[in-house]
Amino acid sequence: MDALTDLLRGVHAQRAMMCRSFCSPPWALAFAPTAPLTLVTAVRGDTWLLTEDGTHVLMRPGDIGLIRGPLRFVLADDPATPPQVDFDEPDCEQWRVGTRTCGFPADGDALVISGSYEVDGSVSDRLLNALPPVLVVPCADGECPTVGVLSSEIAKDKPGQDIILARLLDLLLVFTLREWFDRPEANTPAWYRALGDEIVGPALRAMHDEPQRAWTVAELAARAGASRAALARRFTTLVGVPPLTYLTEWRMELAANLLTEPDATVGSVARAVGYADGFAFSTAFKRVRGVRPSDHRVVALRA
Image (cartoon, rainbow, N blue to C red; front, side):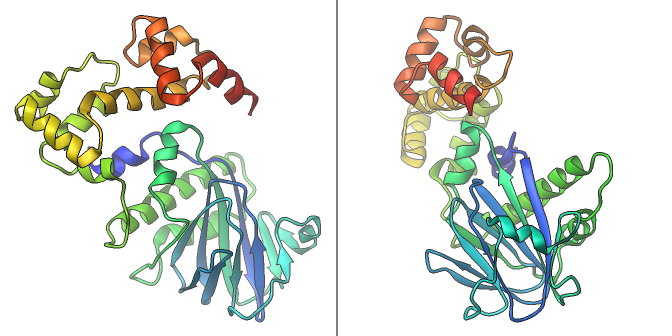
């Protein structure tokens, strides 16, 4: 399994909110997303992405931007154009001209798409923590096929449309992150870089694939084709913690996700992540996460 697949495994669009906007100059649209991720793309016309932290990026048609929220931002034809519409204000409904479509005016030459992306769970925090507040990936060919399909599908109102749009948003996110993590300026986390290491990578993937297994350093070293000492030394250097410490932290991230499932119990989650003893699991969970599993479950289910 490659590093990007490992990073994105289990991450899917949840409660996605999408809109396409037709605009004519001068135009500027303000957004104040509460979702962890917002994806924007310029379908037609050049678009400036301006954020409250001072980022100013010109997006060409086909370029894709990703904003890690909550962070206010503006899409505009020019950095000097003041926002005319705030998508978080009730009166923005007056601009709606169709299904998931707004017009400023409806026959505007420029077309932009915005989509909020909920990524639930503690495992998804790994993805969020690996990203800068704002990133833009240029589309080398001038148009990414998924952008065109999304632009067409977003205005349809048919059975199953929400699922189709969520999967298209997933695809666009994966494409964007794949391109981003290949760029030299991407500050990828230590564990992500270590997945590509010939010694540490196999050990990491083994723990990710079978977190419930009672791994020992010797077994992980055998997977890596290295001695125990060599694996422990290199793993700690590249990842920042010893192998079994990382395993415990990974198990607790998975457990935090599993505890949010309606039918889960502390005992079933403990077994799923390799603990036969619920007490030992609860102790490890509180040490790593700062709260008891039962308390985490109550808070998560109320959210």
